[in-house]
Image: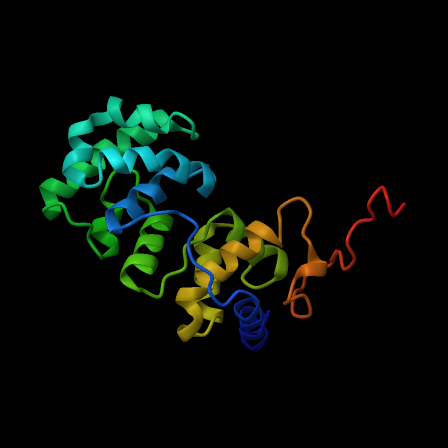
Length: 219
């Protein structure tokens, strides 16, 4: 997809969902960081359900560290990989206290040095909390980048670099949310609902489904 087409594609998504934002529920940067760490291979809805009680009991790194790995685990057993995530969150809180005085750092190097924080998580925190022009590539954005021709790539980093190169800089930060929500609710993995897509004319996907499937009643 050309830069001009990419801009038109993203503009169409923006006009269809101008107020797009993260569906994770958080009150501060620390809660955002923990939520994103927990969201790996889990839905935002399941994370929000788990963190409601967790954040009420431990709203900051100090209280979360005091809760400890076993205590954290009791709140997040309903989400995938909860044992490893409980370990990482407990260690992450200790690292925040020891290295950053309990504050969440704003730079990539420091974020990625924290337990359980990879490039995607760092990009989300930098984007949402600190206003950085980053593109966090999750499964939805990876799929859209390849399916539509917006930014094809064999790895998440290749898709990220392609998106950063094609999307106008002034649209890059909110494009993160436009793309995620579009992938979550319209350009779905198994059955993309192309008939609902506002950007279908620029999409290069060869097997577009431009009419909804017939219901049993209609048949």
